[in-house]
Length: 105
Image (cartoon, rainbow, N blue to C red; front, side):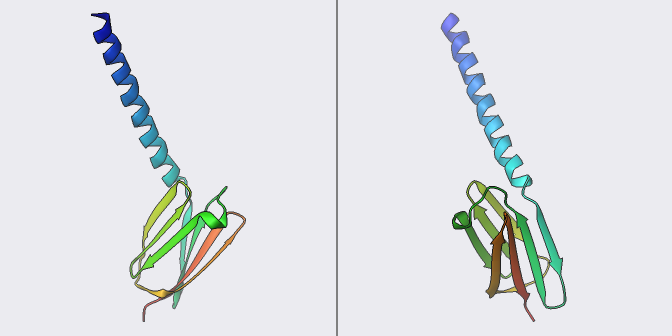
């Protein structure tokens, strides 16, 4: 009978640890500061990525979205206007990624 209780206890501990791990992953994504500045012909999307090195960053632009990955961080941004995906410029300095996107005419 003790084994049944130990099995239940072990299962509850595993479920709790999985839940906390999932919550931590969600929290990490929310902690990424994102700012979008828009003018007549472009948008500048800025990401705060402290502790990330340039070689870890992946960036994918589509007509209405921008995706980044940097180490454990993954972020999907739905853009307010359509862009030219082939005309993207990015700079990374002091933990800040700035992405300049040309708006579609």
